Length: 121
Length: 108
Image 1 (tube, chains in turn blue, cyan):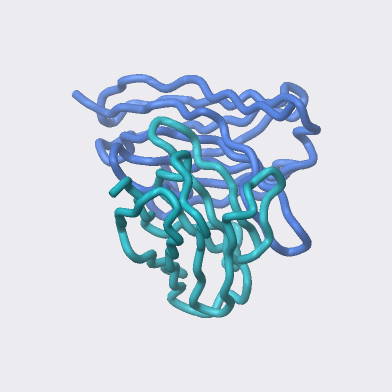
Image 2 (cartoon, each protein chain N blue to C red):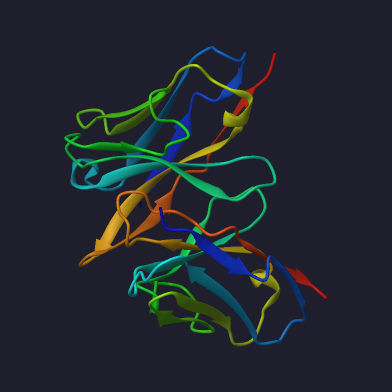
């Protein structure tokens, strides 16, 4: 069965860095685009970043552009999110999600359980 | 950027009620609209994609409709397990698949 397991969250001071991982299993990881979505405490869902199935393209939300880097290692079935220059407003649960499609219609059909990132001095 | 606005932001209903949640896009998105359900402490779950196609395994009491800028999610007979927060998501302006603000469905 499809599984996505995030790790790497924790408490970090403002301005510092953190790298999240998302280990995928149960499907051919290299066939799918992957996304990061975050949710601040008590708030809604915010799309963060996407990486193409082969890593050839990457896109970011304006709120993280220039600070976060999405990457993947298809040989390890793992997705990453390198987060630099962290701010208090980056505090959130971070989810990885698989993007599937029905023709041109894209959607997130599997999500990880999330990993909590807390930015605090 | 396409803005997604959900209404209401919260509602109270009873088991067995029929409820409707609305999602409005700031510009036409054809049928590029998804719905998710999220329970406290859990990841979102896909309910509907392409505005009206039920994801496999989702009960038929859930339905979606709409196109252009106005969409609805309907639960025909609310069950205890349906009390959750619901999010719409546009997939027209890829790759940024932005979400609405959410609608929390609470027990009356």
